[in-house]
Image (cartoon, rainbow, N blue to C red):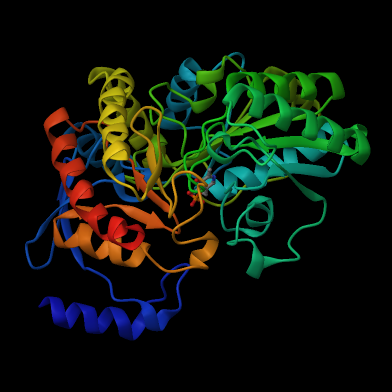
Length: 441
Ligand SMILES: Cc1ncc(COP(=O)(O)O)c(C=O)c1O
């Protein structure tokens, strides 16, 4: 079929996520290998956001493909009431890389479903109903997960599920509590959270959810004192700490899990994406011993048909083997430092670039119309102007796919990317920023 024929079929039948359908005009992707993708006209793109930040090991990995084929030859699926070798082995492999005593794994289809199960587990375990989630956080598009989400994606889903309360997390670049010092921002934000919890009733709160580093709201890296303070606050009040590692997990930040950067052990981890690098869908909710002991005596009333999918679990095993064999967690940390320096260089040269944040191979450029006041260029929900559409067009024209929205440009390539490939990517970004510079000078 020609590209035009495919596009016509696509627009006749397919519903795309998050968009008014009339505005959809997709590039039709054909194949992918390593860090590259090719569309149906043969144009090559660097996959600068690893799909939707999931293809951590890169496209077309033969080790994973062969493991998938081997599992398909045995059984793609067995019912959730049965054990299976892939499920048992992947459970062990996950427990070997998770922090502390987070050794107990419940498999889901994806990230939002892991979050839904964590909400239920936290409520049943504590007997409390409130769930705390931060403003500028994203947790998924299902009923509970979207209610936890602290950005405009939640608005159309309101009123959402009952009992969800939002709190402010630190935003060191533009701290709402009046300081430019990241540590001080962490301290002040923690004091505000403590006060909120005191007034709201600590014994009514089941769990505090956090992305250890905020993902789709701008790669917001909290200071260590804040994350450790939240852990202490949870301990003092019998509240569970849930680390949402759907995006932050699996080497993205240069550590196995995002929370490892803060020397904190949560009670529950939710994860997906890099668990299989998107070769097939799989997510997980992971408990510590305390939850495991409780649910050894009480039923965990949850689960869907495809939980612990044999093909998904076999894919997960081979995927973790690739992380280890190719030393990808270390590579993410090392090449992340390289990327960080390059992006900081861009910040100096572009008047429209307010901040460059990077941890591992997970980065965000935040645009501004005024470096001194940090005034936005596009504004929240593009309330001033839509620059991300124009930027995305320029990236595509030059053979780069990046996810951009509002004042944010996200850079999160597969962890196999080389320094030379990072150079090519940054060169294209550098050029595209001439457009945003032209809006402020
Ligand atoms: C932090 C976080 N939690 C949950 C989700 C939802 O995951 P999924 O889209 O796999 O349901 C996402 C997706 O981007 C995410 O970034």
